[in-house]
Length: 489
Image (tube, rainbow, N blue to C red; front, side, top):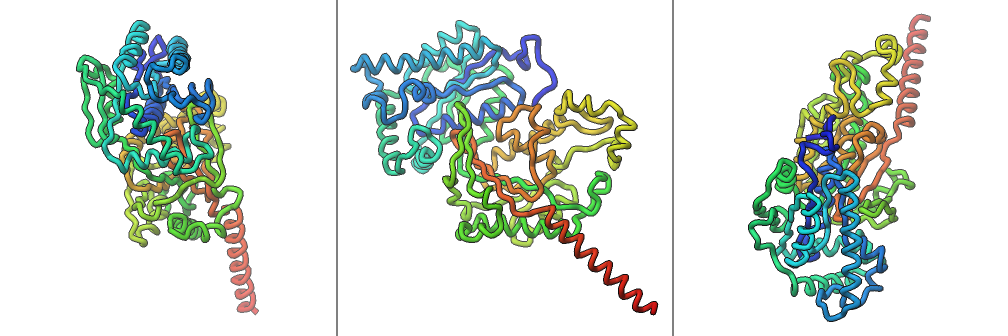
């Protein structure tokens, strides 16, 4: 499902009521990555969903990790002062969740370790009394390589370890894991609605999960992973006929030039010596700019984007079945890169206004601008598609994107790229039509535990290239006229 056009009388979808998803597990098992993935998917469905991370509350109350008492993560009750601090953080955290439900929220994700039965029973008792349905997700991992990868990701994305060396992070986090393992109690109560994830999707055990929305979450969990991968987005090249959908025209000469430049840039960017070779082909102001989004806000960092491993992962190119998209992707086939064509990636269908000028559209639909401004997400012309229609069409692509373990380049028209980028970023439906994807830009997105790492590269200047093409055409035309005059004499 994509964001629906209706709500129930309570403002909640499918009469599903309110749901609290509680993560369970030792640190370093991918719980935060999972929480944000669930939030992303449910928001795409139109559900009012929010992630509540206990560590964020603890940082806001007590400051960074270095300022915490040494036995804060020991979870013993020997130090009454430390026990009091932990209880205060949990109380503040759960109060925020309760407020979310009171204000009409539908699904909250309780992102914490919740390692013992006592804590889980307290959570269940408190929120069940509010009429909230509880669903536990236990993350179990015995893959040391996956745990090591999760720990490495802390170096760039966990606010606890800002400024720490990787060596110190590993030592600190391994100690936290050992402390939690001493008190950890797995879920054994079969009466509890819960899902157990082994190695983030290698095996899934579902127990006593009921309800449409809960089962949609289970379905989503069966399609995700937390392996490192990079997703690229780029527009198609210029076609011979730009403004007539039915023409389905092939690329122009400039479009083929663009396709070759895109392919060369992607291959250079992913190669081992990319740092020394991309400087001449990108806009410096847009290089190495990284932003990541957490539940507490957005932060920008410079020159910390770790692109290691790109050259060892296989790249796939996804395009639509339209000729301009196929032609743009054909260049990659020449370099033995697999290209997948998907009809769902076709652009918005314009309907009866296909090929019309702005004046012709206004003459036939004089009030369309006001209607479009009032609801840009749902507006459509007769026999056309709205962004809502496109979002529904793209759901199979989104699930395939979640399943993909290889790097993916998606080549498409702006409307399609807007929807897919909005899904990854967690944009609201009404924001989708206003996401800008400039011709000549490559958007690079890397899903992370604490949100997304993104970069934007400019590898092509459309105005400059078109100006140079027009000059070449003008020179050739002048030469032809000159030669004809010579012959006439």
